[in-house]
Amino acid sequence: MKYRVGFDIDLKKNPYEGKYIVVEGIDGSGKTTQVEKIAEYFRSKGKNVIQAREPRKTGVIGDIIQKVLNKELKMSEFALQYLFATDRVLSQEEVVVPALKRGDVVISDRCFWSAVVYGILDRTGGNYGYKEADSLLIVHSILSMYHRFIVPDYTFYLKTSLDTALSRIKKKDDVKEIYEDREKLGKVIDGYNWLSTKFNKEMIVIDGEGSVEEVTREIIEKITSTKLQAPNNLKI
Image (cartoon, rainbow, N blue to C red; front, top):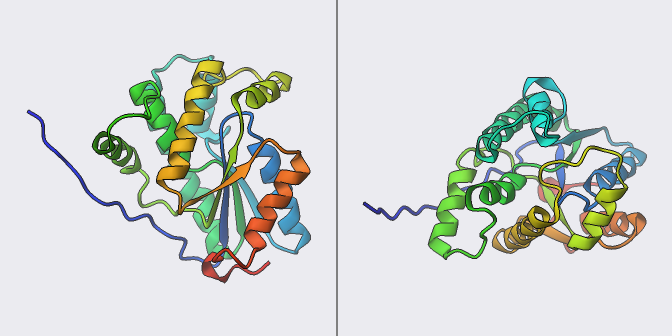
């Protein structure tokens, strides 16, 4: 029996004095570097900055996730998504929310938006071209674990080509993770492009092909621009 299920989802905005900034994108897009650069900028302005990442590399759950990503442990990608969810809950409870309550600036390498992209990839094999009704149902089933999470004040999607990302990944000394191959990265790019269109009011697209300095400058300009409605009266 088939049943049609449809509903709206209300994303939770940041109610605290602190500011929540997230950098999203595929592996090799420059997220980690930009988190460092943005943190440097805010610290130069006298702000107390907390740098975060999802998934975390430490802790009981973070340790297991890293071993799966690095191919040291085997686990289905579907099951892995539930570990991501658990780690994100703990990250919100232990890192993000306490920092925002203190009035800090939280700058994170990924947040729950990654779960939409990678969750759909692991459930459908990367089919982002399905009918609207099916896409909504899949997205809601994923976001059902996250819809009470605080949505970042600013989410920047570093849009980067597949060749550029692969070139950058090749230069890293780290172990190649399970999502870091041409086929999967190509599908993840499709996912992020779809996500940035579907949730266009939540995501700010940045050209990730430029130099580190150019990308940082564009992000800072977006944050400080008077054309953007700075959430919670952000003062720089």
